[in-house]
Length: 147
Image (cartoon, rainbow, N blue to C red):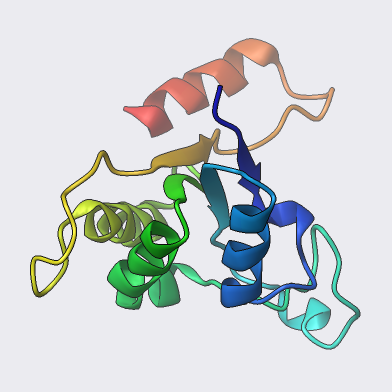
């Protein structure tokens, strides 16, 4: 059985430190936290849901997708998913993430790696249940956004 780790739980490590640790511990997959750090969190201590040493924005993941893929490949890790916390109605963010996922699956600019299945994207509904909004209204919003 193969195990994967989400980098949400590794806020104090950078990209290279993360890959080396996961490889040394015998993991076979990684789910990269790809999201924007809120400006008010950037100067706070590293934390699971706040500031991360590895500031992997959607733009950076897209720009460096093959380098990140190669780093993972070199350490026996597969990129299985992107933990992005993106909502289904955030179309431009979804496009960036989908393009990054596709880039990570390709064989690279020099054909140095075999193509793989693109990583999964976590996509949330347009808004969370707050206990006040009718479930049917939320359901309809979600169906429309996912469509």
